[in-house]
Amino acid sequence: MANIQIRNVPSELHRTLKERAEKAGLSLQEYLLGEVTAIAETPTMAEVIARIRGDELFEFEETSAEAVAAVRRERDEELDLR
Image 1 (cartoon, helix red, strand yellow):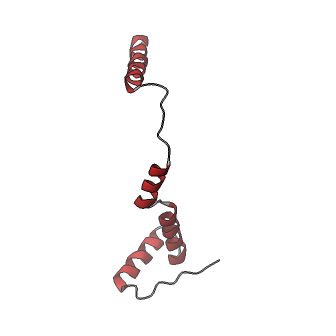
Image 2: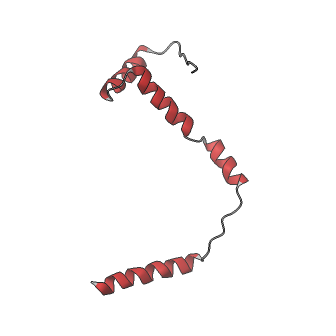
Image 3: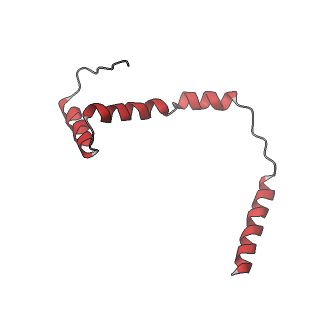
């Protein structure tokens, strides 16, 4: 496994992160690894835009009017059963 080292961390920031780790029942290393993992797993806005631009447009099986009508029918049927 690789290592990451961060230098010149302000004392207040270090204290805050250490407190959060303790509250979570984790070591600072475990806590930060979880946070860094979450950051890496979340796509950036640029990545999201690139995916959207690269994807073909969605084709829906029904129009929005048909979908609304279906939802209303289901709702009305449920109300009739009461």
